[in-house]
Image 1: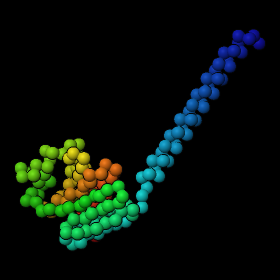
Image 2 (image 1 turned 30 degrees about the horizontal axis):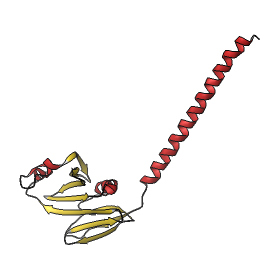
Image 3 (image 1 turned 90 degrees about the horizontal axis):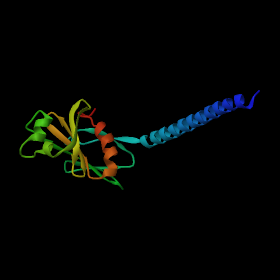
Image 4 (image 1 turned 90 degrees about the vertical axis):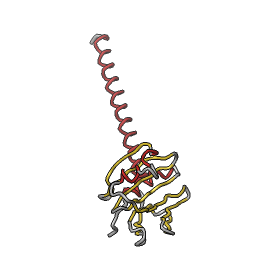
Length: 167
């Protein structure tokens, strides 16, 4: 066989081998990164049932301590504090409550998100360095918040586990 005919076959084999090796490395890296993500997201939780005064249930990571005192729930660990407060409202609509000219919270919120949590109307967003969730139930507004950026994702978890009325 002439030398020039064998040479193109070697190039094709080399290109296929490089592509196969590159594909293997890509798949292996994606598998490793998805395993890391999965292990970070799995946390053991415990259910907290508040008193009849606050009247809600949430799930919190077991590494947090929880205290209810004077109509406020404090959830804390070494990274910071998450608080849950409740106030009454003259409104039956959360947007109207948050837009009330006496408090004007809706105008101060950035990155506003509206969703339903546990069948209840909810609005979340940021004011300065604080992340807040407002959840409305029967003319009551619950506020879940933290000033600690490292607890934003934990606040998300806790807020999405919020249930009223507790069962």
